[in-house]
Image 1 (tube, rainbow, N blue to C red):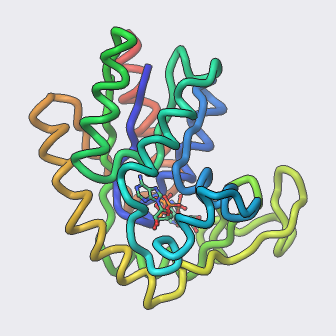
Image 2 (image 1 turned 180 degrees about the vertical axis):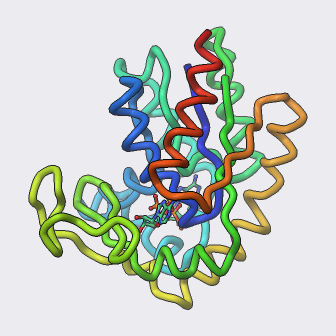
Image 3 (image 1 turned 180 degrees about the horizontal axis):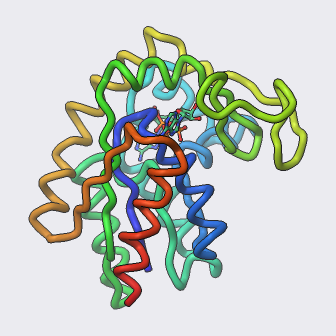
Length: 216
Ligand code: ADP
Ligand code: ADP
């Protein structure tokens, strides 16, 4: 089962993907996490992606598509994956469809987590992230020990691109380049809108319900 989590930056894609992947045994593939891992390890891909990420712009499609293809080709993704942050452009969506078609597969479901812009800014401003990509919020999802990940105790950090100026640009980029995917997947009958303004737990319950319905 291939599920694409769609939604603006700060909608709760990463938060929900962590919860769902544990509950459903689906691999969580986050393009942002893979880019950040490459950045940290100073790989050629990380170096190419850095300037785009710092400005809150999208990394070019060719680099992004090649990276995700590589990830989805790994054995743990053969039965399915929960995609978070990819695709983000129509070209990426077409590339994903073509890739899955080669394996005789398709995207099965696209939950679209909707949250109004003002709330996104507050969420990203208070986001703290672990090295492994687990996310917390100072107010809405605080860690048990301040500054430490609940799961592995590693120190939490604030992402450079969560600064207000960069956040505004990321939202602009989302509106220009990613929102066309809402209609793209709607036309394919795959889109299910989820109210992302509810609590983390409630959004999780709503998401699990649509996924379980699909499995029946
Ligand atoms: P995305 O992956 O879509 O950018 P995240 O999952 O990283 O979003 O969430 C952004 C921030 O908002 C994090 O600090 C997270 O703890 C918080 N958050 C996520 N879902 C909710 C929610 N339903 N209500 C309040 N805060 C939330
Ligand atoms: P968010 O939490 O806002 O959803 P991500 O962690 O998914 O952010 O992405 C962080 C940055 O990584 C993006 O601003 C962009 O520069 C780059 N990135 C991640 N996924 C993609 C993608 N599918 N296409 C292009 N750039 C991407």
